[in-house]
Image (cartoon, rainbow, N blue to C red; front, side):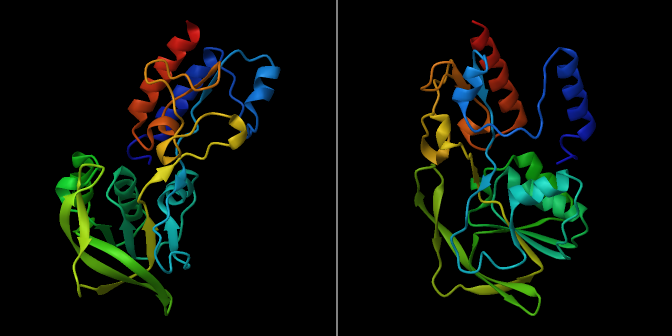
Length: 258
């Protein structure tokens, strides 16, 4: 979002690159790495990000008024103003969920609720970002998970379950366990799902894909299973920060230049 990474900063960095001689071809879809090698390129660095939002897997998530966080943020960054109404629910507990909630508030939503199935101590979002969201009026409902969505009279009726924490799962965080007979409903104009994202790497690229649809690389050299092909950023790590993506780019550039 622009409040965190102003457009002016991005424009300045892009201008600096072009002044250094970097050619940027926008609106160009790459369908084959082999074709790039045939065109004379000696090395390829894949940094396509992770823009495919994960599905919640609940009844009614295809209802009008339910959108994914990545699409929502992309539309806002393009200068569009999605119609979200006054009451907005955001599902998730990561940085994208926080970005979505703060952006929704800036678009005029008067009531923004984040629904997160674990407690605050398990929340993966940056603690400072969480505090800033709360200061801006975002309300976080912890230990709550949506189970069903139904559109009624132009609004979304979201059925939720209260949760309690059980034993740690594979992520090391305590697993949320539904509490019996704890269902309740809340009404919203829009529900935005931000429970995670994954890369969409074309199969024709021929690179090895691992857990979470991320590209597998050597952690030191960032080389893939293909000679001359490197990868980094969210396409390798899953959703992370701009700083981490920039660090991967610097590392890859150094290795490519070796």
